[in-house]
Image 1 (cartoon, rainbow, N blue to C red):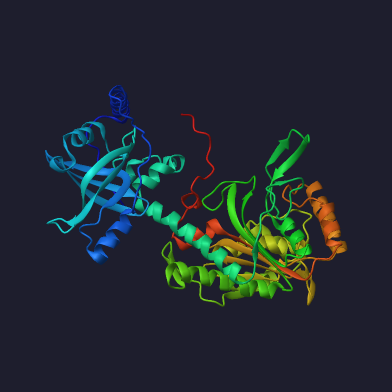
Image 2 (tube, rainbow, N blue to C red):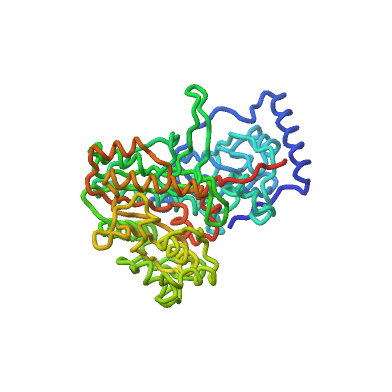
Length: 497
């Protein structure tokens, strides 16, 4: 974690006024505080690597970065700049750059400024590879003092509201989001290698669908109609499978008008993929291979640390039915969730279920209360009641169950997948049941989507679909406790400043 030391002891507001005055003085002298760009030949990392490999003492490097430290030795300065790849030390000597450039540097620059420097590399007596500057220029003036150090951002929310300061001052934050990018890239590459086509589907839906969630509502003036921010891309992706794109995926932003916590953000990222001519077991196999590949490609191992535990992504993952999990993980006995005892068990464990809920809905509520939070290692849960799986095909061995799985890790749901329901008559009846549930007070129940039913009537091949939460995956793979720390700009309350 880098520490940023101020050049003076002025307060932040006073320092801001001093820097603005400095800009005014520069403009009066005809010097721009934000001039045109200057060509950069290398990043700091590239320059250091090139010099290390070839000892190119005669090569001229043109570098640019944010000035993080500077030490004044009279006629020389030692400066550290930071770019996207790392940091490097600059050696600025008055006799080498000339009095005009040296005095302008001394008078006009401050910590936080973005600067450009050109010169050759050498190794100091302290063993640090350093750029011996022959030319120097200010590229962009910073009008505020940087934090003294990362912990100087005493308000935790300031890290989220001013993420740019967090990224400037905290190496750990920068690395976390670089890892996030690498995780998403590995997901994309894996699916493309499996012959999946990446597509884009609408974010504005006339009917919210694809998940049990409350949507955000907006209004389109030209059509004079309400629209909903997407809660899931599922129904559109399955329309594409009907159209002949047999393997599709979308890395998508979803929006759900629900609570905010360390595991929930109203705007979040998922990967959803659909594969024709597959079933729930194919989905399980593909999901665990995908996750194992992503972890291995980014971390060189299948085991990663998370909050004091070691999470093992070695396939195959454990697999339990809902009822098996209630016994093995939830600590219940089979008689506890028998039809004549389940109401008492629900009351005992504080599970949430409607009075008129079906047995399957009650069983699911009990699973959420007694099992979900206790799962640590990657575990597939199967055998879900059909009542809580309105878009899933029925299990061919038991019509009361859905051909569905969910993946849980560290008490969090990571993936949801199932053999897609492709019977338009069955789907229509389940949509009707969802509408009835909404009438009874379930605000997250699905709407009736007549256009989707019509699409199914043209024939959806046997298909498996899977959705995986990318934000939660990044949380576990970067050992991060809060989802806000893996989303660059999480949703926050309005600031009153």
